[in-house]
Image (cartoon, rainbow over all chains, first blue to last red):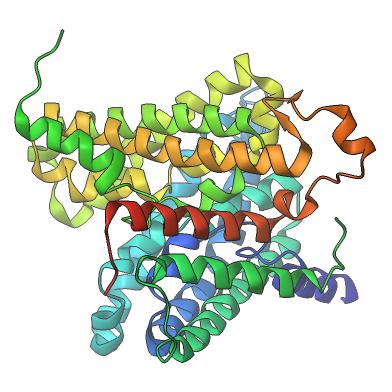
Length: 202
Length: 208
């Protein structure tokens, strides 16, 4: 049990998917202007990751891994080169479902997330987490914990960013630096702060 | 020599400079940060992405009349994934060491917002030839930013370019130290922020 908490906290803070893995930057930068949007998107990402990572683990274990098709009488088949396409399809299908559900039950949230909801499917934090899970050879439970933690880390990052950007409204930033430029500089500072969790070694 | 119409020239120019995918459209930022520790990985990533962006734009544009709009994202993803798997397998076959270094980021070309953004935003509503050029220009614009950042990071962070030492040894003897921050995540964020600042100052673009 302690191991799972360890994995959880190290994924949220030390190896934060955004600050140390650079994943999910596009929607992080585009949707952190307003706190409500950031919260909604953060929650959506947590949910999608918690479901897709274990789901992809199952797909890999019982369909794609070398020898996984032994139950079908094909012990030699190795479909692991299909990992990318299978992971992406399962993620895309799931996000489509989430979109339909949110559209039905919370039109306001749907309105504010706008174009970025279908784009959760192409949020690289989602696919990236599944790929890291595959690369690191987690067990099923570890995969589930890792997925939830990675989503939480990303959600935490975007909410923090939204809060900082709110304050930024009142600051006098040079024209060309406005928006993307200053956001990246702030993200750099936040990344440095997060590195403090593991200790900085230059 | 292929003749380009004026409209096609505009498409090229937009992808490369005034509408640069990284600095203007804020797309593809993730990999721009992750693969730029070394120039070599940045170059290969740039080439891979340009190939995927150009050919997926071309394919989707050819198919655009047959794609039902409700499931278009999935269809686009499938087209892009097939191309990315091709690139991934090629890299593993011919540049194994580099493909190990790039780890999951080749696979992540699939979800690179540049590819999906151009496919969804341009190729779905434009004829094949122009869509291809658009993908190509955006890929090259992205590659240019990538290589620029990688050159600075590799030079300042490890004192090399493409793996070969370029800083004279005397410099180190006089107490010069590589800037370790450049290799780490924050360095990448700062640098990209500065590149965006510079590009926008020159091209005159301002965010509201």
